Image (cartoon, rainbow, N blue to C red; front, top):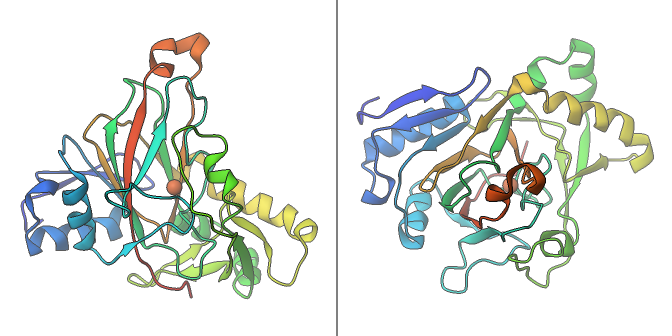
Length: 282
Ligand SMILES: [Fe+2]
């Protein structure tokens, strides 16, 4: 790449580590262009051994667009743009477990998120991403034709779901919000079709009941989460993931089984997340 960065894919379906860049150092225009290109090619890109402060993480995100504030999860008091994703020692869940794209229950969901690992256990708590372009392209022609005319209702869910099960998370006093999106959206930069549904936030097809929608949604969720559409990233302190939230889903795996690995279960996990504003899906 023109900035000297190198991309090393980590799986067949999506995901690449980008080497040779210091994200905290202020990116050149060539480096920003290379990361944008890599994001379009690989859908999620990873960086190792970075040293970001809240200020430099926000500055990094701003090179790619305006910062999006989470509609429900409350950010840090000193930097509201940053949501601190905390798993306290002994907690069995990660915030962000269960497959989803971020905040699809609003009219214009974020185009991407940048997640920085400040403290992570030596093992356990990997994150998986899945490629929703592949999920679309591998459907039958009949299914594609049917879904092409359909819309689905996405909901953020109640604020309680963001905090009730996590000691370290805080929420705004916000209501649940809903948005209707095409089931197949097109990528605003590449034009590729995307199967735009996810298990956490897609409730039903527009004009149908939840009960009527459930069988087909369950099929589409299971299809989009197939292992051959995914990559899996093992965090280390200083790792960064930057994903295209328009064409991927992700799942923060909560595998802190204390009977098997007490050492990992006893460690605090702290991630800093910033989201970048996106377009209304069409
Ligand atoms: Fe997420």
